Length: 108
Image (cartoon, rainbow, N blue to C red; front, side, top):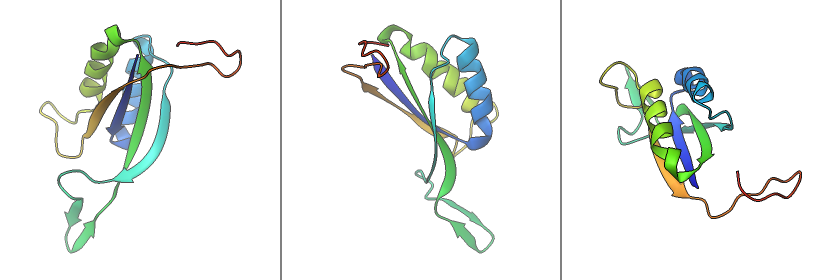
């Protein structure tokens, strides 16, 4: 299993969640976060915004569908054809085990 952590623009969340749900990946945790990337925030006039609002999506999937989920996120979270700074980042980590709390079953 893999955990996909996607940090994306808030205005792209609805689009990404809809496409993931339509593709058969409805189980997602969404967290409001703030941060900055390589661009170190944004400067608008004389004001520098060090931390920008983002959304963190956490999705655990079987190894064989990881690439499909990543492609869906990239396609729907990117702004414009080429994308722009601040569109986000995706991190993938291994998940050793998962349990459902209600019945104690192991796995997804």
